[in-house]
Image (cartoon, rainbow, N blue to C red; front, side, top):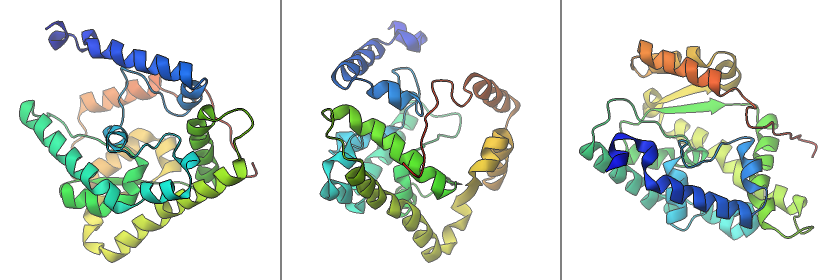
Length: 248
């Protein structure tokens, strides 16, 4: 098949683009607002866990609008147990078919709630926890989730007061659960590296080298060159600048 040699010739790319176009039509402005903080397209890397949650009936997009019972389900460990187990099996099958020649990466905030399940299903996992001032992250998260919700509501019916209460209920476990887990499992310290966001932003390559060294991984010259090229081509704000404030 043509796309065996050229991945961009895969016909599924056009199908995925059609779905994004339909989403743009049905939820006007959703993709545009999301892109300000997270580029979403048929040819960009995307978080597998995000899609598997949806396939298992736990849709993150528009979740805060669904109400308190849905938020409770979203953070419930039992709802995520089969998803994490399936993800491990899925990547095991991929690796059996075409063995990876480099370390695989997964990036999703939802994982913060499920370190225990992650390390149980993937005992060789290495976790990088990014720390940032919550007075900055909370309004950012509100704005991000707002962009996921407001496009699906009718004009004038989006209640920011109710929305903020639901986002607070969703955010609290993201702060408390990881620290509780680590206090109860000091033997897992070698699996977890703490990354300070300001230091990462100031020198991302130096930070990557630090956690690679922590996990006894090698930073090769081609890998470092690839990082520099990516950083140069993906400066913060390239697709828009999201504005937010704690007062709002």
